[in-house]
Length: 294
Image (cartoon, rainbow, N blue to C red; front, top):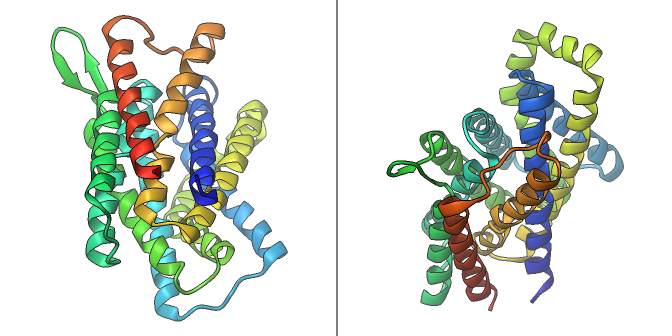
């Protein structure tokens, strides 16, 4: 396994931990949309810190616009994810986001000219099926999660953002690309901060525990994002994204452990047919990962 593949898998584990913190914050600490604004605001602050340490490379104005737009689209996908996470189990909601693996393969092939072997496409297809199964719920009949439509839109938005990022990386180094894309959050964030400034300030001053959790989560997210961009520099974007799709596998493992040991912090359905479907999905994801990385 080459370095960029290892990095992409590490990114999946880091992001899975942040998903656990997301659900905890949404259901136990924050319980308001201020989480959305604060999460992205912390990301922008971290981008400025990286800017101060690393500096930033100059890029053509057209590429700058694409980078900022990529960041804005990523912010939209994050907002959609938060909305869906309030409606369902985090281990069922998140996997649907990874339908972007299929979207990215299609878009990257059409726009960037990335072409893979039939076995690679088979692996990507199995990955998509696996994460889709993780999003299935069973009661009286087989049905999809209530948050499915929101997450499909989130995954498409995220896919467009990732392909735009890959294009930007052809014109600058990965840290500069990270800074530009993260600053693009501001296109979506600033109007919301102005509109909801009283609510955000109130949370910062009265909910210290929630603020600490958010800062920790966003620090981990930013570190994962940096590693993701580093992997994207070295490997094909569709394959990097496919390996980072191991995030639902790590999330399920973490969710089961936390739910069993600390049920007051996180509640997941971890028995019966529900867990059997998730185990089948995990097997598909592992097989797909082997095919893609081979």
